[in-house]
Length: 169
Image (cartoon, rainbow, N blue to C red; front, side, top):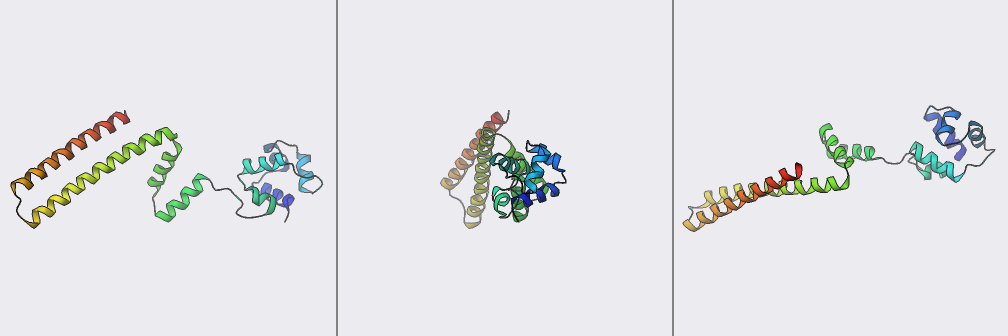
């Protein structure tokens, strides 16, 4: 199959008349008809416009090398969600994240990192306390150290929360 047939097949797959397809790539119906019949060669400009407007890969249009369509963010997201077994809400979250400007994503990553670090500190504190308490009686120095660590963790948590609230405002 050559380029003229791929153009015709693409147009038919899109359920477009020659006039409608031609209009989308900035040419007349007679010109498109001539290309589909092999009377006229397609221009570089028309190749670029077909690829852009119909989201097809240039390799497919020129040489027939599949896949036909370019990957879009939605197709990549769909594949990732299947692979990772993510639900609809998680997919929406990822799509929304990817749709915001880079600067906003950077603020979000910073806030999320702080939240995760805070979560990690809290979990470590609980694990350490349980482990120490189950192994032996604490000395006064060990109790003092645990209390200091708890105070430090609470201060860090409060500071992080204040930073997150400030950035979210």
